[in-house]
Image (cartoon, rainbow, N blue to C red; front, side, top):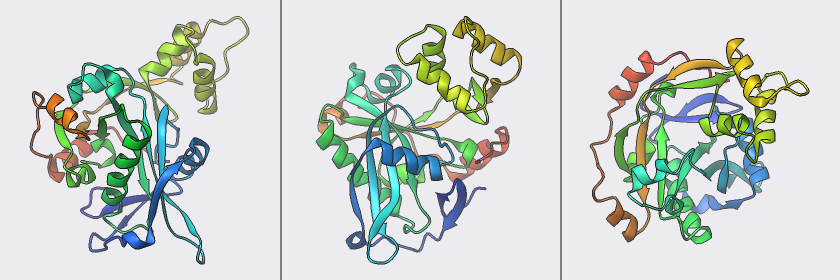
Length: 274
């Protein structure tokens, strides 16, 4: 569904809040949270429940039951699939100068402009905790009806659309090429990557079966299904003067219109939010 209202998630189901509500900062707090807490929150509520390769997680705390504050939002800053994601969209030659905003989620109880309030404060905490990171790249997926209104509100630099590409999905979830590469080449972390696919419904590799052959079998049987991923809208947040200088040669385009997301949403393969 495409709407001018703010989309929220709870229990992995979408709802919408009126854009005429405004957050009261006096009732909210933003702080770093541990990955276990963020992982559980994302798994319970986000339409992409798998926890990404994370560097820092930040929580939004707001009014809960009674007088006690509760977790009502989470932002996860993560590791990009490749260093080229950072160098291409930030202008830094060193990919360690940037990270990716992998998850951004607020519950329906948060006012309509809660994401921009939350994200701006999360960027400050990111710089305090990871001073080497000076830029954040984020992608908005029109296949889920998102055009990046929050990122525009935060004055993120719009870099344009990514190229359409073929991806592999299992149980409706896209498996990154980095995950597949770990499995194929028996790299560090390949066991955890295999466990991820098994949790999503793949059979476990048989004794003596090479993981590369196992992946080939999953694809041949349609367990890992190839799909065409529509282009994503790409944004970059330049958090320092040096980041703004590094990005001067890169495009800073006019923000996409909601109609652009609608057109791409209608062309995208149907995606389940469950």
